[in-house]
Length: 53
Image 1 (cartoon, one colour):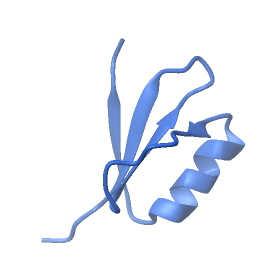
Image 2 (image 1 turned 120 degrees about the vertical axis):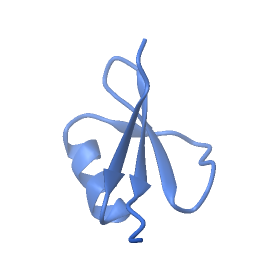
Image 3 (image 1 turned 135 degrees about the vertical axis):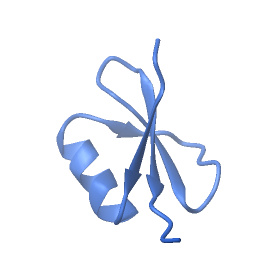
Image 4 (image 1 turned 180 degrees about the vertical axis):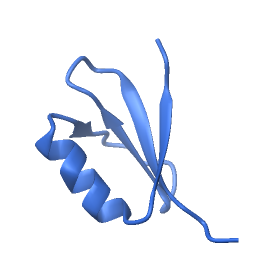
């Protein structure tokens, strides 16, 4: 199994889009700038905020 970390500019919008595609949000979240989801086959992936340098 491969775990994906996907960098996004808007965590809330990206999470909402992932849910429309069939993802579910994990109950436990590690930190404020990362959101863990599961795809429809229960594989985990993370969305995380892009940090500008």
